[in-house]
Image 1 (cartoon, one colour):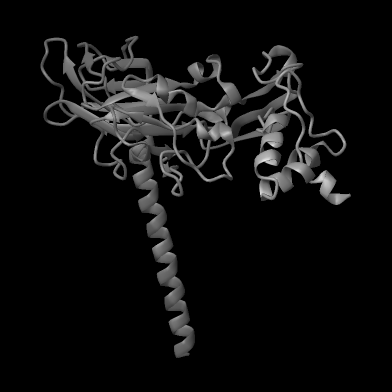
Image 2 (cartoon, rainbow, N blue to C red):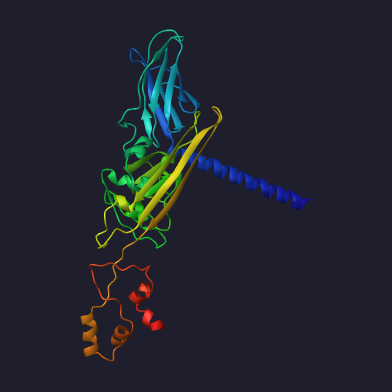
Length: 381
């Protein structure tokens, strides 16, 4: 009995710890990726309106959040998903105010002040407005790159992390990385306002996305069409971000809505559409690059549950030109005449490489050519 009781107690403790971790992580992630809406409600005469009901409706999912104005007429709605909202404000003795089309961005605090008109609650006043372009709630320097910009800007290999270097105060930087990275990842590093490259902090949907083995590079590069928007903060950001003191790249991905939506793409590059490499003396190197995929999303239960998914495939066949340094006939003869018993002379005479000719190319696919360059073919005979 005691063993069974202890076992149940351990399971209950583990379940409690896991639940607490999930709740706390969800709260911390929301602070980083979600938006906050604040504002003041006042009457037409300029006096603040106390205890007015403020509600926001997500125009994509119909999710509604509510709040009441304080004694100073201020309302605050935190942890809103970055989307387009409609703000509804009502108070007995005033007309209902509707403000649609308010766009909230990732990680930002936006202010929208509301002015109520005297009248009946059954009357409505619709105001066309949006959050101000200049954020007066925070001192940090930020810029949001929206999904429409991501779709329209030409990006080699469709990688969103090529865009932060366009921000003021940033510039590309080289970083030493392990050999298992490919060369396209090598160019993703950048610095901001003279800070070290390893101080850059990458965030993806509220979770850390900085490669711990290198620093200064993202661990995961999300599919371009799956990204809703991302925010670049270069200085004066809040303590909720923590970790590094350099720039912060805060990415939020898309989610499902009440309407079915999706996209498909094929990004193709071939040698016929590119320039010849300077070191290709005769013809262009072979290149067939295909990057393709799709996204899809929609409702499972309207206004309640949604789904979204994305896939991207990558296929590439490429010929790579490399320079090989080989000895000239003059060097071989000089070594033979001056150091006939040296190891160098023995290697030159028995394992000589091809005669250098910058005007021609040597293909490693030809029979035995790789061995001749390495001086191995004669050694096998």
